[in-house]
Length: 240
Image (cartoon, rainbow, N blue to C red; front, side, top):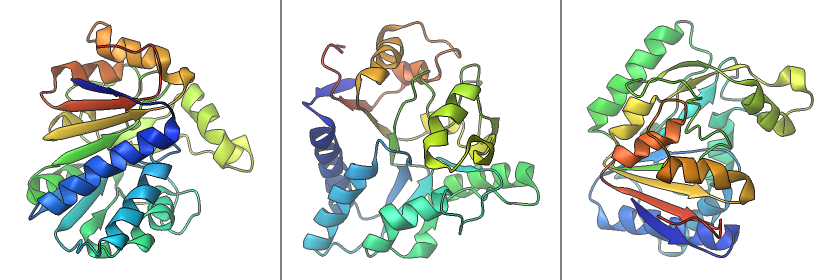
């Protein structure tokens, strides 16, 4: 595991964008695993700016997202389909057919999860997976207790995650209680992982991830077993 310490959220976002940009321009074919939420927003902004200024052709880039809420259509403004178009896809020259997200309104969610993992395998696996981390050390929507062997699956969101997500919705009753999420086993199959964490609220999760026991009660602790993880954080007292 490699640790990069930065001063603030903006610097974290810029450093992450530079890493992803370099990976794109250095690759003949690239499968990017993408995250959503507030952590990567500025990174996407910087990355889009770099790609456009340098007129980078993205026809060789494929993207697979970590998750999507169950019950929200791609047109719903709170869906991750909508988020990705607003934040990144519509701002760069990437073929939309190269962008993949779980279908949260699939009639058969069990089939959807199986086919999502099969699709990732058919693409050749994820070359670089971008991650955030939750206050309870969840990655994607893999809450404490999720099996380290899990593939893409349907998740019952914990009360703390529902409360964290409530700020994006008009009222708490509107917050989805389930999501389709890449599993920890799927994430660990990525060739490289880039994890961003900003703010003191992530301090304990980071400490548990880096130095704690490898346990399913701390989902991100599994990353200790990955051969290529880079962590970028502005949390001052985090050390390897």
